[in-house]
Image 1 (cartoon, rainbow, N blue to C red):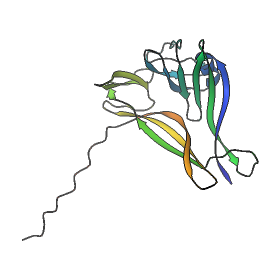
Image 2 (cartoon, helix red, strand yellow; image 1 turned 60 degrees about the vertical axis):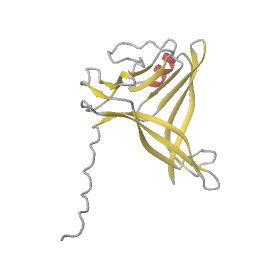
Image 3 (cartoon, one colour; image 1 turned 90 degrees about the horizontal axis):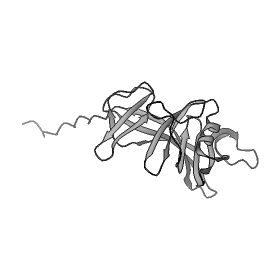
Image 4 (cartoon, rainbow, N blue to C red; image 1 turned 30 degrees about the vertical axis):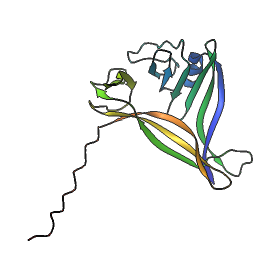
Length: 199
């Protein structure tokens, strides 16, 4: 019997840019980083360079946390000191439960979180849209696929749940997967009021 296994391994100790380059390894994806003054989303291609909405390289100096992800894996980098940090790769694989010593996870459940704001304007040539909300101003985010004006953007992820020996189930981790834009939901038609029996 096979099941989904969440795999976490330490992959790099060094600057954020070097960790991202090692993670990219010929793939492309998106991510975000926390800096003292702001939070920035980015895209990366096979060269592993974080690029902003205008296509230019993003300065990762001073970043204290970075998360980058594709549909299959996620990189988590956390600053330790002096511009260097520890990176972990999070992914999953199929395995047989009967293999001794293999940790396994019973459930792999997708879910979404709503980002602040709604899309204003059109996607640019680099695949970015701008979110706007009165409380936060504007925020460029990388979105693949259609993103019409007024759409909402959702952060997609999967969560991993584990069952202990007593049958209790607990969520033990999550892995980010991507961003997707969806039309703003329209209110459902109200149910017709019961006008009572005919006279």
